[in-house]
Length: 463
Image (cartoon, rainbow, N blue to C red; front, side):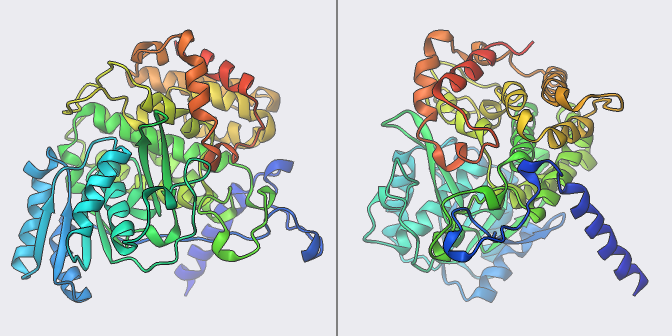
């Protein structure tokens, strides 16, 4: 009983520490009558069941057997199809007598075209369950395939986030989906989000619904041992920004409009006392282990810790949301010209998602710090800054400098210019950011097109 009581006290103290006292993050409940409420007054926590353990992938066949699955779709990409993680899944399915079809055409950094190809494959079969083996690209593609196969009359843009798509509420029942992440970044095994490049506007957008989250995430840290150095780094940068953005997002009770029906409450709701705990915990793991995981592929402790951090951050941002780093990253990835990231075996130019997100982070958090400086200063301290004599008004500069040093130590390309952009591209980058209201509206600080232009300009060089 004493041990149980101590755990409860520890959690309550974490919640208290995570609650910023600045006005933008006080989370004070509105006492206005219900008829006068214009901002939201509640938040939800939705997360997949997750199972962690070395070698846990071998259980996937038993899980599908327990679900009564008879015809399973296994989705992955061509690179992973030849590697041990996929073979481990196939061995487990075979051992447990599960019939399956393998789809290995997932595109790294998927597009609407690649999503539609996977959807057509899923619709052409009568799958009663899905298994996604891979990083965020694979898991997101599999979520979309499951969604549209379960809603055979839906047009592609029906569920895509507004204003790019129609943003319809999802009311159909999806088939079970088991996610087996092989990277440590997206946290997609915990979320109801699927992101893709919409080729018509050359920017990323997505589909978001709690109904899309995987039934189960099998987090097998052994899969992280197959990641090359730059994949580890870029995946880790996604965890870093998921944590920072969800922790500094506008509070849930300041987000508007207030939904008239709970089914309309968005997946990304704004920071809240529960997501805060996951975000800060993930950030502490990133600070302690990311550099080790990148620099030493044999550091099992570091790589295994980052695999869990990805899921922790996923729980946080999957409910709180992200904001400007992610909103600005979508055109950075979508407008890529000739840049080909090291350690990515693909046949097309690519700015990996984690890299596209982190390149703007110093400028973004310098910009947003004025609204919740305590949280920005806390993040800087976790990442290694000495804030004992720091002034609260300097929080943005301190976090900016801390991030620049962190990225420099991990050999990150020197800003947007190093991945092929120049100041002449800024109008197109701003144009690609504007439709990303699903995330940009969660920024704690309001911004104009001019602000976005300045942030892109400030991100052309980092050092």
